[in-house]
Amino acid sequence: MKGTVSICCFLSLLLLQATAEEEDFTSVLRDRSHIDETLRLAAEEKAGDYAAALQRLRKIYHTSIKPMEQAYKYNELRQHEISDGEITSKPMVLFLGPWSVGKSSMINYLLGLNDSPYQLYTGAEPTTSEFTVIMHGEKIRSVEGIVMAADSSRSFSPLEKFGQNFLEKLIGIEMPHKLLERVTFVDTPGIIENRKQQERGYPFNDVCQWFIDRADLIFVVFDPTKLDVGLELEMLFRQLKGRESQIRIILNKADNLATQDLMRVYGALFWSLAPLINVTEPPRVYVSSFWPYDYAPDTSRELFKREEISLLEDLNQVIENRMENKIAFIRQHGIRVRIHGLLVDRYVQTFKEKMSFFSDPELVFKEIVDDPDKFYIFKSILAKTNVSKFDLPNRDAYRDFFGINPIANFKPLSAQCSYMGGCLLEKIEKAITNELPALLSSINSGKQPGLSSCEATGCGEKPKNRYRKN
Image (cartoon, rainbow, N blue to C red; front, side):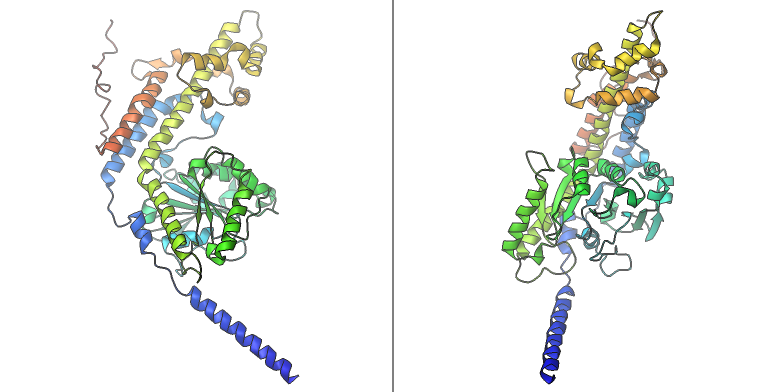
């Protein structure tokens, strides 16, 4: 009996010693100076040039792109209306992945929030049940989702369409921080494969798609213990199609493994993701441990440090190129709006050509919508304009679009002109081919973009008197 007690005491002492060693190890904080250096947080920004470029971009959008967007109800086709808040918003970095892989810990580490009252809650169990937006503010405070959706100056007002249940799961955190002056972080609920989407109480996949469409950088985080791919993760990667250039895969908590085991896990991760990422060049994978404590002993700390710096350089590129990315995004949006306007115009023209005195309007238009190829709707757009066939929208989308928007509500493009405002098609084409590329060139060359750069003379053209008869 006495021997049994002695063994139990000995094992208890060993356990206490191991726990003490672990606490000593986790209490050693990692040096964070390389974060500030890599992200150049001490450098001052040229706020005046950036504000002038944003003002010019807003003016181009409102005068040249939005009129056609509204005239042909583009928002009802794509469900993507660009607000002033979205144009002026900071770059968004989105964190996705299974539960308890270290997404919140990574944000705490990048912002230096560890052991502060404002750090995001972390734990071994699923902890983040909300979409948390971490953004810059003059003081530290939390903002409810209903307030964020009601504030038109922010870029989150469109989230109201996902319902009040979702807004209760949306929270904003404002704090003064150099990094948050340049970027906004979004932490998401972890993917739990055994939970049905209906149990969340809101359309989780649709909300994820909204953030994915607006994210400048997407970190998909895994850890060595959660490499299985289930239905919800498979659906997530399906939503990421077309955004491969923004995706970065992170294998977190890598210092928990020996080098040989880490190589096996790295291979297993690619094996699991290969069927989901159908691209020639796979996304960049970063292998490290993103939390504030020192790396575990006898691990590849130099490799992990280099991987971390590479990830920070990636993040810095997004920050440095934020104005160029916004201009490119607005131009891409303008191209889609222009294509939509051309297609609706072609539907209107075809409808008028096929109508006769005895024709039934509903039957005639139903025939056109059901089989647009018979009337060369899409082919005529490719033949007459410099539109790529890869940019054309889905034909079936227009069956739904005209189901709620009668063809009689739309005028042909030739009728969308005025003496004062000009023609919608000419304005949007000028924005796509001249104004937005010129603004991009002025940013790259370091020139301050003026608001009247192309307005007075039309970029080198002689001023025209619209009322003078030729």
